[in-house]
Length: 321
Image (cartoon, rainbow, N blue to C red):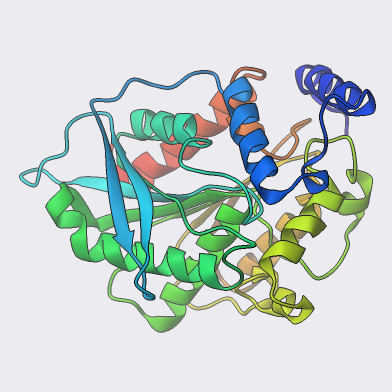
């Protein structure tokens, strides 16, 4: 299990900077400082943003009267006369960091490659908004898109879900809930990109890649502590999807995973659980990749390869191309 050499060189710079006191791990910062650092580092890792014909700002109402910022992407102008399929996307960041801007390039790439609209949602972050706020926001965003998508030029019969890291966790929770409740509109595909599936226990990969592999285990615990109201929240399947049951008729799943990710083992455990429950799962483990590799287009070719794999799944699942 050797690191990709380009990622290894990048991490050497990051880790040497930390050793020299030039930068700090996220868990050593305040949430506000961590958010600023995350957005800045995202710009360094991105390969560049695709130029799309339509990028619009949206607002999504929540059950408690708040409004979430969202962003709509489409490679060509959307039209009610010829509605397009859409992907609802939730960014990663441990429920504490991450934004529409941090994942802007990724969402643009998916819209361009897949030929579908992408709606990226800025769900509310901890510690200002603790569990289960993010899960509620994800659910509210889905129901809003189902209800309002037609007016945006979106075909609400052809919707998919995707998210990275805890954004993938939100997708897993939402898809499970929709299947369990027998919602009238179901996602045609869920894309889980190295999601958190179990915040309650350690695994060999959490220990093996605890430090020096971009996502630190101490940072993970810091994230969980800021999002959870108490330790019992971590045992809730909306926090740890691996602890829940697999419903019948769950949307087909694409799991994207890096080999050198502390979340590696819990992701594999979730894949096994889904398959045992009768779900259809396509798993790809990218050798030598760390957590968050999908947004490292400026560093590695595998980022674009994984984006194209997701786009291909979307084309087959919702775009019909």
